[in-house]
Figure 1 (cartoon, one colour):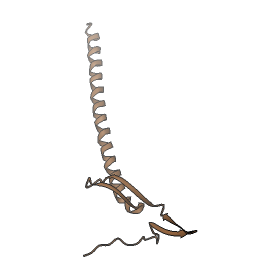
Figure 2 (cartoon, helix red, strand yellow):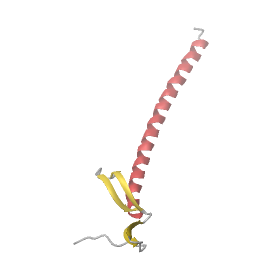
Figure 3 (cartoon, one colour):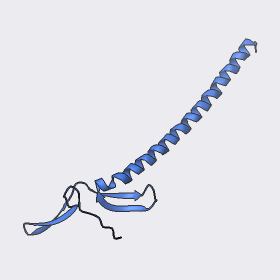
Figure 4 (cartoon, helix red, strand yellow):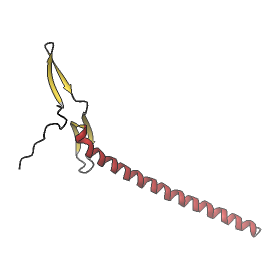
Length: 103
C-alpha cells in the first residue's frame, strides 16, 4: 500500500511562495520547525523541517529518555551520598567509643 503525507489538519501550508510587488516572497508557517540531532529511538541523524505538531511525539520520546537518564544520575548521587554519610557516622561512633573507653 502506498503511504502519503496528508495536508495540514488546520488547513495551513507549511511553506508557500506568493508574489507581491513583482517579487517572490516565501511565507513559512510559524509551526514549521527544523530539528537537528539524533532520533531517540533509532539514533539516526535528523536534519529535517516538519510541523511542530508532527515533531511532538519524537520530542516527547527524547524528553522521557532524558528524564530517565537524569533519574538514574540522581539515584547514583544519592547512593554515593548515603555511603559517605554512613562512613562519616561510623567514624563518629568510633570516636565516641574511644572517648568512652578513655583512649
